[in-house]
Length: 203
Image: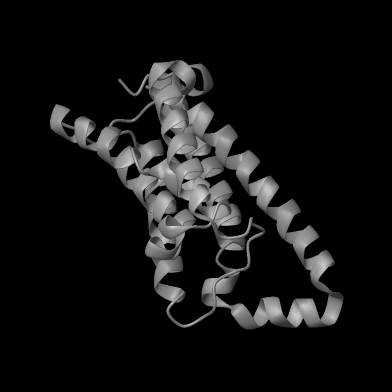
C-alpha cells in the first residue's frame, strides 16, 4: 500500500511539473490573445527589447519544465485510452503537411498566402496528430494544451493583426523550398530522426 501511495504521489508530482511548465510557456505566449494591452503597456513603459528578453526567459523556463516533466512522465505512463491502428495511420497523414507549413512561415509564397498563418496551422495539426496516436495522460496534457492554444490563437487573429516574423521576400521559389525541405524533414523523422530524438518510432 505504501509503495502504491508513493508511486501515485510521485506520478502526481511529475504531472504537476508538466502542467506548470505548460501554464508558464503557453501562458506567456497567450498574452497577445487574452491581454494584448498588457504587452502594449510593457513595451511603452520599458521598451520592446526588455519585453522580448523577459518573454524569452520566461518561455525558456516554461519549456524546460515541459521537457523535464514530460520526460519523467514517460517513465511512469498512465494510459487513458488505446488509439486504434487506423488513428495512428491518420496521424501520419496529418503530420505530412506540418513541416512544409513550418518552412512556409519563413519562406513566404503561395502556401503562406493560402494558409495565412502556417505556423499556427502546423502546430494545430502536429498536436492533433499526436493526440490521435498517443493515449497516455502526459500526451493528452502536452498535445491537448498546444492544440487548445493554437485554436485560441487562430480565433484571436480575427480581431488583431498577426505578429511580424522575420522572413525572406515572397517568391515562387520559396514554395518549392518549403515543400522540398518540409517533406525531407518528414522523411527523416520517419526513417529514424524521431526515434533518435524522442526514443519512439512513429512507425
